Image 1 (cartoon, one colour):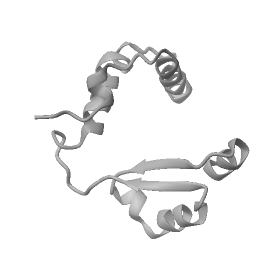
Image 2 (cartoon, helix red, strand yellow; image 1 turned 45 degrees about the horizontal axis):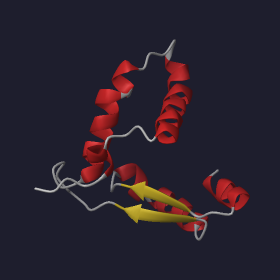
Image 3 (cartoon, one colour; image 1 turned 180 degrees about the vertical axis):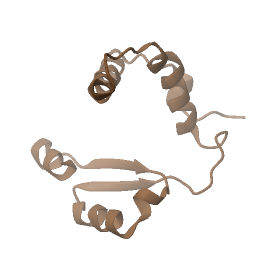
Length: 105
């Protein structure tokens, strides 16, 4: 699906992945390699603590300010509603600066 989208839009997709087992399995790696050059993978560092890995703060901000107020009728509608919520947030550029940039200590 990612390759189809990249070809349809004429833009390369950058996929950010952690080093979880589901992404590092042989079958997953083969699928990722097959998607090149349309899909480029950015691997997050291994074993990075939440204080050093700014994406954890970003997801935490999304969960506490947006997803915590999201209600769904049933489990099956969650995905579509979550995607819709993220699109609305992106259009409004409603994410706080601290959630969009790495923290500095």
